[in-house]
Length: 268
Image 1 (cartoon, rainbow, N blue to C red):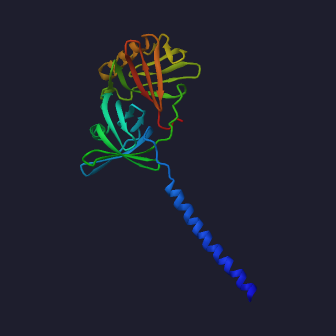
Image 2 (tube, rainbow, N blue to C red; image 1 turned 60 degrees about the horizontal axis):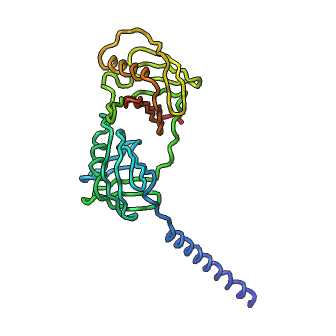
Image 3 (spheres, one colour; image 1 turned 90 degrees about the vertical axis):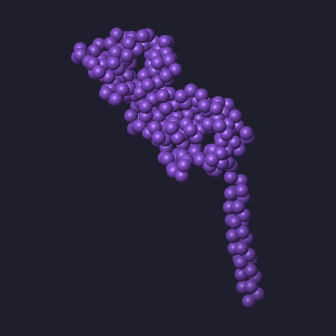
């Protein structure tokens, strides 16, 4: 009997101690949770304003630096100056933005209206919420690094044209008509909006120079013809500085004119 009592008591104590240790471990783990630094890339999930919740387009994001933020309202890109008060608040001074006509302008307009002035910061594991003085919020989550699309073997669809500091979307009658693909050997083919074309590209770092265009000879007028004329001039203007961010390609000439094209969503 003494042997049985001697065995059972330590076993009971061991169970109690094991449960207590497990509980302490969970408490310490929760207490030690590391909250994120606001500086970094964030994917915008939703806005709440005026008693409504607006869900964000896939492209909506904020890339916070120490003194500047670059972002996307969902379609239009923008920059702003920022000043952090530790990790509890940030003051936003809007800068430049593109002015394309986009599908979800309600979200873009609301986002631009909220993302200015002093915003308080609420941090959670992998989450960040910015709150305005009237209680409206911008809810965000940590955004994984989005791989850039490759330059070659991708069909790029021209979405907008650049003229200096302004960016305009293609007119309704020309949307989706201008597309091109650069092959691995740097031959390029596609459509300018009306006529098909081909050419050879030379590459020097981030600079692309299009050789003479070979095109079909259909008479083109209206919006598609206007876009075709601008793209023909752009490709013939000399070296174009290229840049790829995610699924978006920009080609810009020395005079500030250029294009923005987008790769399909299934490109990896």
